[in-house]
Amino acid sequence: VQLVESGGGVAHVGGSLNLSCTASGFTFGTHVAGWFRQAPGLEREGVAHRIHGDGHRFLRYSNSVNDRFHVSTNDAQSTMYLHMTRLKPEDAGVYYCAAVEHSLYNGEWPDLSSGLITWGKGTLVTVSS
Image (cartoon, rainbow, N blue to C red; front, side):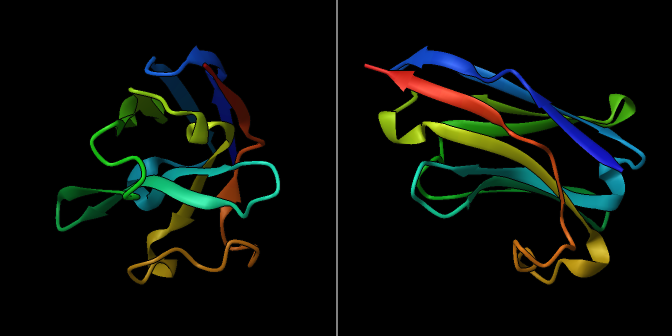
């Protein structure tokens, strides 16, 4: 089971950047999947995630990125994307792709250090003014 992120880099304030996450060993349809980020000196925080339920997909976003970021998935390719627009300096950090089995998600992610979450190695996003 593995997640690999790509697409990080440098963007200007107000610009856009797209991240990708490819899964191997499982499909996103059986997991809650999402993106977290961590800025230097700060804790890892959830940014956006996607939940399957009753045949529907639910998307949730943190208040700090709502209306600016969008998650999409290509289940056939086991790929998840994070489309980031109107970037702000505070969006900079290492972005991690994450996934957890549906049975372990009870309305929120398990403790991030619990070992129950599959993490990618992260991709760096820099926002320059």
